Length: 144
Image 1 (cartoon, helix red, strand yellow):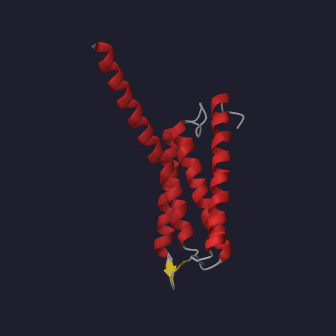
Image 2 (cartoon, one colour):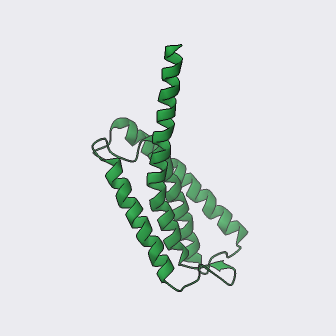
Image 3 (cartoon, rainbow, N blue to C red):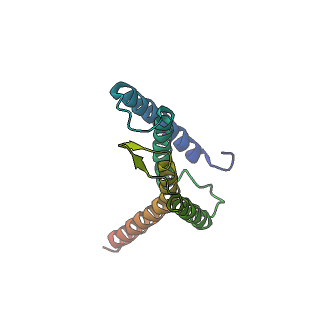
């Protein structure tokens, strides 16, 4: 965090607080509903933490609080796409089913992790597209 500027730090603290609230709410809902949607209660907690981590990552990338100013987002995005592809390939190689007896198995962690890795470059691409469209729209307004 020492390479981030003050805005990025404050944004991350705010998103971390939101993520903590999301974890508490999801864990409470999971506890009170007591459905048993995963094959192991520990896996339910891990799955909820991965969902909250995905929320934090996507919102941090979109708000500009994920990459440091000196960091090259294109190189990092390439690395994340490569890692996500390897995670998906490892899921396909394994013969373990994703759902067994109506419950999610541990194999689903690979898919959720790959989704997490793919979400970083995808969110960054969406952010760049939105910024470019906003700039074009502002340029058109200045011309008029």
